[in-house]
Image (tube, rainbow, N blue to C red; front, side):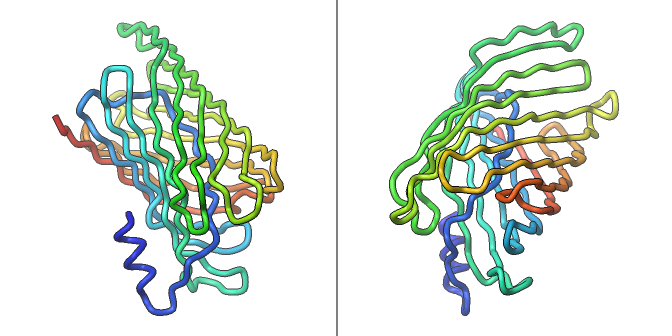
Length: 253
């Protein structure tokens, strides 16, 4: 990640942007098996509140530690326009890095009929990787998951305090959302996905309300390919965008 950022910064005419605030993306309660790592990576074009940006990429690394504990690393890197330019993409915008543990506390399931319900938490520090960011922040989520024979729904509820930016107050907010997936075929290779999320700030930052929908294809048990369209409804939201995703899995031990 740092090597990519350094290479981009070294390019002629490339500048570092003010810290980027990535939209809140609801997660699910599924945990990787011990020793299994999954890379969730998305790249594409997004129209932000004030300018376009090229996401290269938005990523999440999941690593199963035990049957009930997973290590997650969330971050993003983008090339942005200034509000007065279009498709210049000459400004590097990294996001702060969220390092967290996701834990399943309750898991009740009926494997024979494909039904289940669970409760868990995900929390950890936010590291000041963004430009001008200082100090360590934190983020935490409570997760309630429900599964059916073909569907999966997860409720996210939580909040965060970001690293400080200059002399301004640390951005702080409550956040919540729904993550939904529905398998289109019996083999569950094709599925529809949808995320609805919102962020309410306690600091002078613009609130967010976001909707993302897409389709995912799992050609094998260790690979998923997806296309996602997104739109926003409040001042702090991205207006619209399209992202292509790839999520390979690796057995590390």
